Amino acid sequence: MKDQIDELTLLLLYLTSFKDDYGLGEAQRSWKGYPFESLNELSKNNLILDSKRSKSVYLTDDGIEEAKKLIKKYHIKDN
Image (cartoon, rainbow, N blue to C red):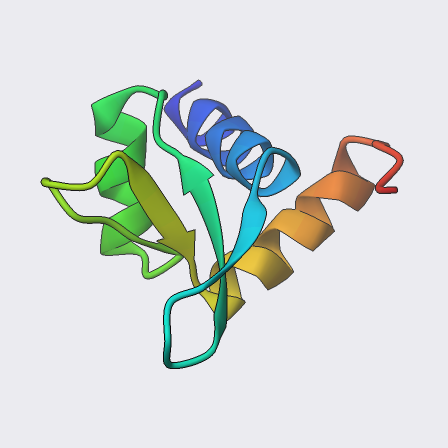
């Protein structure tokens, strides 16, 4: 069950993300209102970049690619 929660957390992070230009280029960010255990696991697996001080996370390229695979897995339409 934990793996599915982590997958769905990544999927929600991606689906609710926004593009942000932080001076060095554009990055995809999302607010981190999800279980800390899942966020820590996603960060450990290099799918997101997390900061304890920030209220948002950055999705890595690997995280974005994995989220796109999850969209197909869960049959979600990506607009």
